[in-house]
Image (cartoon, rainbow, N blue to C red; front, side):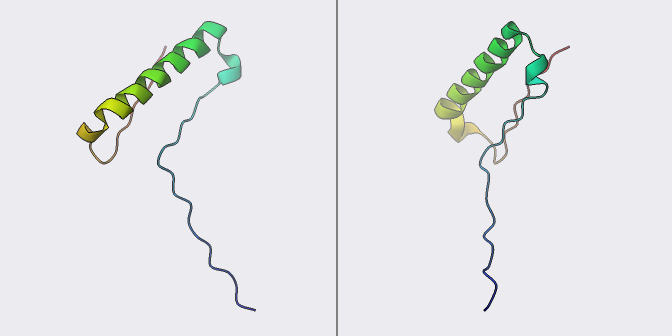
Length: 60
């Protein structure tokens, strides 16, 4: 019996949140708020993006 050919899964977006359990409630809220703003930006300004858009939430 011939082996089935695997189809590659494609990702349109990947979100990685580092150290979420270590964040304060306020920190998690701030990151979630930032992600909502990025989602709105994508929805309304998406045509203006280049092929690859990278957004980073930086903290100290």
